[in-house]
Length: 474
Ligand code: GLN
Image (cartoon, rainbow, N blue to C red; front, side, top):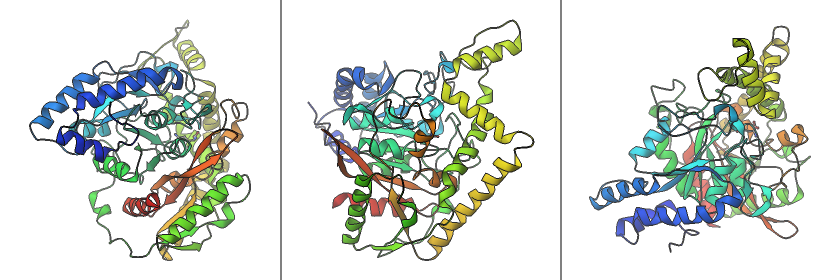
């Protein structure tokens, strides 16, 4: 038996290289764990049938002395990322039966690196949600407390890594969907700079907000995956060039900004205590903690919940029963559309399509969408100003509370949306952000993980990794 609990990508790579175990043995260990735990956790929607063949091919390459650090490393991938020839469904009934016809760019890159794909991870339908309760295939449970959610929308990816059903995972983050489940499950989650990672082959949710990124056990692992999947891509014109990344050296002493005004109301006391302890840790690493002001950050959530549904309403227009997935036939084409969309989209998808259509409609466009776009710019300018004043990274908690109970927020969408208060800003500004495990909050009988979030200037993931590694060590 391989000790999966303490395994990281770096360690697994060393073992594979030395021949302590083969990629096949590693994959077998993960498959055994999946068989044992997935029926209860529901982290995977599908486990691929050819995992051992993939691992066998990796072993061949290892034998021949080839390959890099990801060769033979088993991944879970979120169900909205396309892998050629495999089912992909964004956990939606409307995509029942859909098989991807091409590889997402991130998948192509991971395949080239020799990674193993274990299966499709559960998620909120089309990545809309904070708890995986919006999946059409049942909720994913939190491995730390199975009465609680694993977070969302990349809840399946997070639970898989946290329960040792994968060594790492890919998620997507439109408003926190990598960082929030990472925080709830005790993992590192990175939302890269907008444009750092190609979105080609990711089912679009909010195209100006979406990024693919890693969920992993350590900052070092997240960095390895980020470096493997990033890069300019002719298939996604929003990707940024390598030149953007040829930046200055890391500072000797980090200045960490804290937007104090933003940390009061609605935030769990245990979260605030944990956050203060996190700041102390950073001070121990020699960092300076500085209070900062981000006057428009309080509008982040309303801005996000206007821009995001507007983009969803147009992105989801393509799912009409004609081109992709399932169809319910009516008497004519219009009825086909209405039946297919009305019956196969879940409640949250319908809610957001309706809100998005509303904020974009004639007469309301200026009052909602245009204003949100204008405030988005103000928020981004606030961040620029702070970074220009000598602050290297901005710290907040990742979430206002630890993982909540399954069912606790399902009847109140506003409460659910509030869970995203600290994460949506990085998507609005396009800045990179990371959630790092920062210890636990005690609940009645279980220890619930918490996360510490850092945001950095554009294309400065290196700052996040550097501070993150120091934070992790203390
Ligand atoms: N929880 C947020 C939402 O429901 C974020 C989703 C995401 O990042 N994909 O929109």
